[in-house]
Image (cartoon, rainbow over all chains, first blue to last red; front, side, top):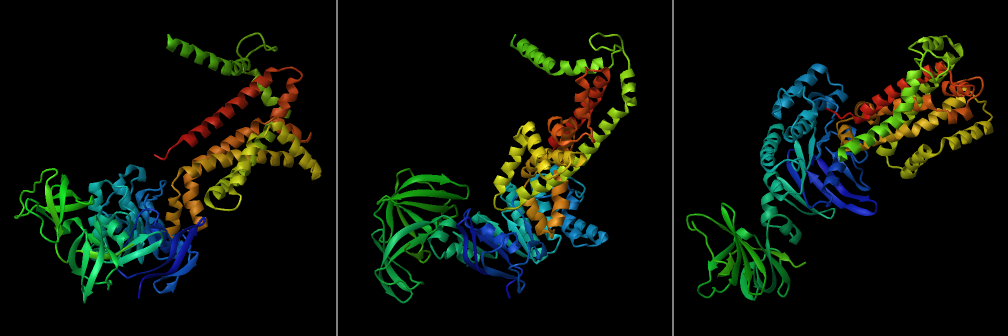
Length: 360
Length: 256
């Protein structure tokens, strides 16, 4: 049984549809991420789960009970806000103890639980500090502590890492994962950062325009995107227009860039149908173009070579003017990757690593 | 050169502003019965003032009205500011705009319109009408001061409190009120001084049975300025100054 279940939820703000008949199940103990561009409605979904926003249509069940009309203060859900929203007139201790005090917990127990939680977020001994005396990273930890001290059924996190610098963000990512494992609470995390979503989650929900585009584990989202939006939003991608020539079983012939290729047909495409072929930069290969290109590869010229430490990114202009991004790794076969600007090359991909999407 | 022009200009402005007040304060310590000549230092006008029962009564009346009116205005104004910034309702912006128009309208207009209202309602002018009038003109100042403060902090804080289990009542008393307290106190002090100083509106809405200090002074100076009045004005000025300074520091104060 899902711990949170949204059924056909719709929400409109001033004639603008923010959430459009959205249904979503969140399972107990999982780390679920809502990923999407800003304005896609992911924060609104979070606020609906928290009870800070009501839905115009549809309903919400939490732990199997109808919560559609239950106010935020009576839900077993706590939130870590993007701006942290700490109480500036209280100390760290009082901020964290706020929820417990409202629940009339005994002072002794409050003290114990706050101290434990402070230790958990590595802020032991800072309970007496004022919020203004803390760094951004520490404030973030207080915000997390203030939510988890209540031992909620579900912890909601609204882009909690976006205000931190790159290094701190990576650190906090790791800590969030450990925290999730330690607490066993269901986490619902909102972000527009695909790297964050892929590294943290058990499941990713890709959202666009108030609706869900795809739900799945990070690997599936990245390797088997259902449509162009997911493919382009999550990771870098090269998209080729293609046409299905002939199909047999799980295989088909397509014509792409004027070249015939045999690829898998997992989605039952028919001959004559227009499709898009998606290739991640790291799934593409580049051969020197000193001889004529082999059948099945596209001739092109190197336009740009960008050194990225462990990889080299090549930007290649194909003969018909299309631009392709290829990622080459340094390894024992290729200790030195070097191309001249404008050098002729042949671009192909590792068979079977392509994803064929319907044409949109 | 430029610097000297700046300094002398500033001196001139401050002299223009403060010489009259200083003159008044200095002459309140003057021995002379007639105020224009300096005859030596004395505190006798302050002593004499303390013996003037009529003046003391008026002073006490003024304090009473100022205290009660400012407390009522602060209570209503704070809740009003909270409502305007916290809840969405039809006409919210118009409602808040109207508050400004009360603040801007000339005292004489306010005074006459309030008098007309009280006459229409058949109310006898006196303490109650005066109090109502003072609450009316103090209220916008409280609301504007408090509203600015509420706007100044992260509204997510309210969501956070609700998320942690706080009801409306707890949100107001545990989160909003402690955060806006400096502005509430500032609004209250401002109201207090406004009420204490007011002449024009009070002139219309109070009756002969309830005399307040500014009006009493006004009637006294029609017969010539007595040194007691100087002493009284000095006390009044210092009180106002203290209240305004306190209000200033309360609104300036950042949470540190």
